[in-house]
Image (cartoon, rainbow, N blue to C red; front, side, top):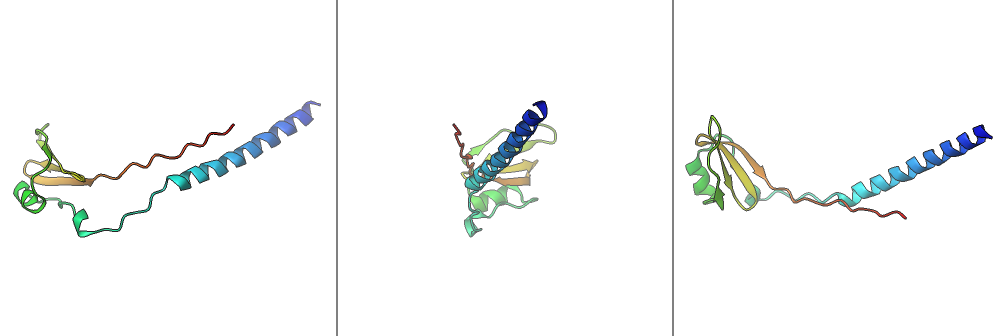
Length: 108
């Protein structure tokens, strides 16, 4: 009797695992957003560009955070991206990517 129960339990776990994998792939597919095609407006400041050049091309940022650390790192916040400067030169530019909340499935 114990062997039969073990086999039933194993079959149940395997079927549960397979059904859970199916739900996971469905959830992952629902959460994927379509990539936005690149446009001129999506161009970011390139590394090595100085602050004056960034301001002349992209305008004044919405917010300028104070410099921190050594060497000083300054952050300029624009509507769609941040620019990080080391001293007066662009270190990195980072575009904001909209967060897509994964759909949650309720199984009863």
